[in-house]
Image 1: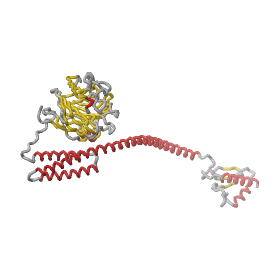
Image 2 (image 1 turned 45 degrees about the vertical axis):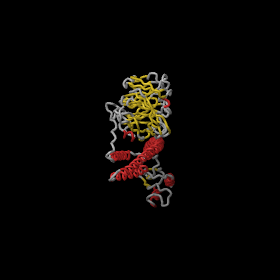
Image 3 (image 1 turned 60 degrees about the vertical axis):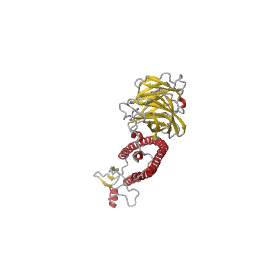
Image 4 (image 1 turned 90 degrees about the vertical axis):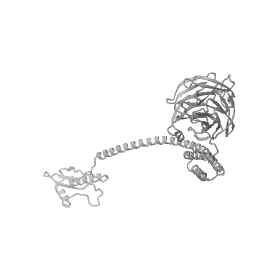
Length: 504
């Protein structure tokens, strides 16, 4: 009886151990031996009432699935019990470790991506700020540029309207052609207004149409009367077979310089080569905002590239000074910074190949132009080659003209004028003749003085030159195009020169 109680107590103890195990069991079947003192009658009596000692319904523990007992040949009571897995779950921990390692790797990978994204966001934030500033500048500059441009176009269309009205009053007979021109000019006015509201940056097409209409108006005007003589053709490009400059066209606004409205000082033009007069690079050389240092310049192969800001080649130098820059035969000529010397820069490689001191030349604002600083030495190009306009202490500030050897920069000949240089706003050379300008008001300059190096004569002129801004910083002449390239408070202007038909 005592042995049976011990077996039951052992079973109850095992049942108590399993009640706190909440994990599903991993089945094992260990065997338990009880002492020989447990009588077989006790076991049999227990087994006779229930051959399976499984837990009763409603029992607290459901972990024991089955347990049975029997007596072996030696009379020993044997109990076979199915127990829950009470060992440490190594396999589950290993699986958890593997899962945790994989998650850790994924987390590190995503974290590295986040760091990269943070760096990229910082970079793009700076780019966005820079772009915002550039857009603001472009908006301001574009407004000024297009207002000037369209205002100029409107003036030209109004002039054509006046000319058509004059033709209608003077033509005898059929006026069908004139009426057609009048209709086209009215259409042009509507087109200008539409372009001004829709497309404020592209005015090239309208300019071409205006030029075509001007040509037709001139042809119509020339043929309106049989007795009206046709004006003689202009001199051949690059030719000096004329009597000098007698008039100048109104300005054509090309655009604002590429560095922006703040860069008011500088120069621009087109390279002239006697060997290839119809070609030549377009160059723009704005000074830094100090109005003195020439550090960057830009080259374009065509005027369209310059207008559209495309296919540009930018270069940097460290020794340029003032807006007296000129370009001749693929070389740029500048005043060397803080000296009275001239530098010759090869535009193919941006190297200063020759430097030469200009004898006795005043420099560093000693005798610069009126309202324009650091242009004591002003280089110029015409049909005869390279020139330099300057002053000396001996000339007491009066203008001096020297012809230069464009290869060595050696002075070939020198002429002394009686015109005081600081009273002149700017100057240029045409066929060996110096033409000087002065300021009349904020909208008008005047070509008021000339000096002819061919004859040694000098005198007064009164040719009006209209401008878009207050100050003219530089003037460069192109012999083949017979145009002036004017840098006007940061804007690039073009003028057509009109020559006397009677040779000197």
